[in-house]
Length: 142
Ligand code: RB5
Image (cartoon, rainbow, N blue to C red; front, top):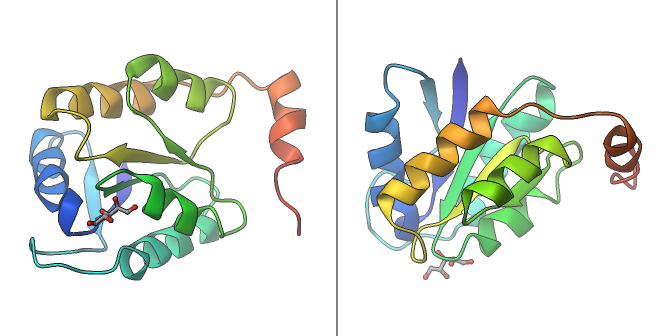
């Protein structure tokens, strides 16, 4: 499975750790950043979101310090449902109820093992559909 991934400088180390940890499971499309030098998170979240918006089957991971900057940016794109997650239950519900297609991680507020657990949960949990399908269909405004 190919997974889109991007971060700013605050998420760079975690992005690299995730890529290494899941190198056998996923093929990565890395939209940067490529060092810990200070950057602006929209410059990396927008390209990832464009890739997600173009392909209904695409999945991604976005990382910044709090997760909020990249989530706000990505969710400006129609058909992107980027979910800020900090524990496994929220990551599971983001898939089951919201059909989230981007996992957003707050690098400065979770440890690496927690991040790995969230990735495992997010990518192994299916959307439940049913009443949640109707609600997800109502998210987009265009
Ligand atoms: C960078 O210092 C920080 O502002 C950024 O990673 C993110 O937390 C913004 O939402």
